[in-house]
Length: 613
Image 1 (cartoon, rainbow, N blue to C red):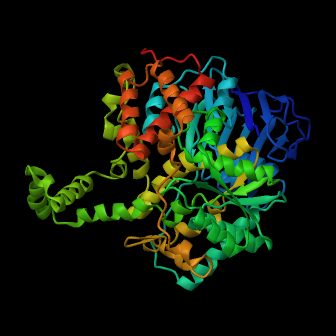
Image 2 (image 1 turned 60 degrees about the vertical axis):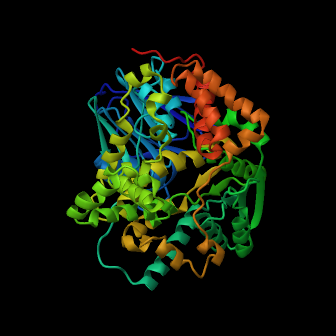
Image 3 (image 1 turned 45 degrees about the vertical axis):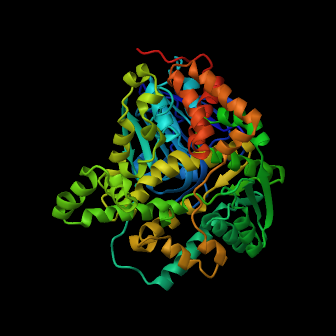
């Protein structure tokens, strides 16, 4: 399913009233052709979207495009008209009153004003650029690049960031001069001057703990309402991994709809990677119509080129393959919309690092004289400590605890552990700022002033884990398969409720999701409640060793990437050696990331070769 919006807006103000019928001051819906080009009062736009996915409203010269599943003040009727009228008065206030997933573009040629915004989670993170006298907007970086007067150049910093993060975090994109909106962000142009505003950001309550029984009832009621809002007449199903989030969505969908929902699971026939038994437990417990599929290396091999090319920029999360196969199987079954459990970890405290970082944070409570005067000289300053297992662990603890947040969460980053100088060509390193990723992470982390480290990590993950990574993965996979997708945990009512809970209800000591699990203890299967967090993705590294054709594609991609002057030529041989002889899972991830970069470049920039300026 192709989804694109391309819009180019002339920024030169037009005299008020020009082209406006006398007495016509009311906003009204406009019928349009989704597959055609349109032009109105200095706005050119092309839409390629499924029916009902976008609405257009107009008031004289003013125009508003709204895509997604939005409501305004809780009402889903005539949303574009009401948003347009509210934008006339106060764009930021108008955006705060929109709920659901949306992207909106408001243009007032008479005042030379443009407002471009996405929802609170950036479910779809649209892109924009300025090009001489035009503002250019699109759902994707490719949409924007197609409307620019000049070809868009690959940004060297984006290449570095991709290999560091495995994605390219907003606001940057793969292209110089094209930017991506972040969660709760709008850009506004007034008389040629562009400004960015964050109209919404997660806020965390610090008041007294609510009554548990009341909070439990409220949570289950709000989640039911969020799922009911997603049932829009389409044949609906849900992903089912067997984790707490997807199992909860499956069970609540069965409860709200009053009928067994279709659930979809992917298995891996590799020890340590397969969780399909938990999915079966949930499916049996909620009596769903369960569909499961064991993914094979041959299927991955056949899917890689199309999947890599379908994203608007390089994307390295290998879980997109499993998401795509779930969506493709669902589409063949006649399902038109899938529900995902994404967001549960980021609002209820489900990531294992939330507990791990609390342990390291405890080091800061040690009196300075004991830490700097005793522990650090003993553990860090004396040779031979590493030969004693207990002291070696204590030394590692102190070394990590001394690293400030959020950098401490990334001490196992592949690029940093191997060494950037061993990976990147010197000319590319000279053209980028290797410290930019850490600086960007620290700046976003600092925006949250909550005292709880758990809430600060949730705030961090709302952008870097959810918006930059998990949502593009699922949305992109579903788009390629031709199905819509919704995320009930991202419903504003659920998010605001979770953010108001005490931090200790999210991670209690070292127990993840304390409130979530206790509130659903009589709803979810006991095995799902008790299971440990699954920390593995697709077993690509293991398959690469066993499957000759997959290994050939991977090494062939690395050979092609070798000639683009991004990564040192000798590093590819070292990387394949490490996969073969050291740790297939750990180093296989880097092979996948580099392979997907080359697969993307082969389609979108086949002749690209880095050259220093």
